[in-house]
Length: 321
Ligand SMILES: [Zn+2]
Image (cartoon, rainbow, N blue to C red; front, side):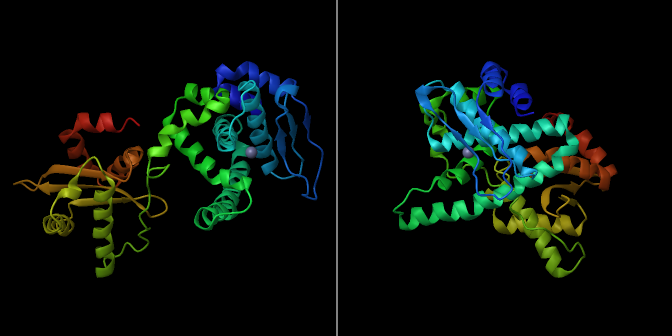
């Protein structure tokens, strides 16, 4: 399955994938005690790597196989050039994520188990490993902890899946010691991932004063997150008046996702006959625009029809992602 999943996305690497599947020596001995670690040993010039993957009878065994398979693949594809640890782990995490996407299409019954194993691994990578990295950065450390590489590589994998083409991902697997030059862009960023979905949930949808304040707060936070619209440059008083008036006139629709987190809003003014005009909409991130529009259509079908008539081209183009 690991070979199939990776070959589906990275056809450029198909011969290296075949080598890993058929020729790389592997050990899958049963080890329920938990003392043996999974690892891939790079034997450098002496030949193919060696993969050790103790079988523990858990769903995460499958993820471990894919992780180590991806290490072996990155070693074989890089030829004699050795990749630095953070890039090595990045390749392994990319392999895990590509595998999860492949499962979604090809073995959906396995997905929930494997996905929850992946989520529980996050709590190690962003728990102990991240704490160790932060404390080494703040206080220094006498010893090198390999775990420092994991949280960074885990975030990089997420960003790269959103931003890179499959071809560029394949070139990372082949890049060996040159991997850092492919990742140089990330050095100049304030954070690896864009900030998203940071709004707290609005659990109480009743009309209490506190809740109305929270709803206005949600609208303003969405204004701040939508860097394209630039309403954040408007004066506080006039923006507040506008939002408050729209709420009073029932001319704003704030969409919540299934976690009750605000994902975007649509607001409008009333024309002379009370018809909706001058639509504005905001989303926390552009990928969620289709969710906002669907929710708007479901809850306010009539206004949504006017909205579609008012801005047909814009919606069709923006709804594409
Ligand atoms: Zn690893």
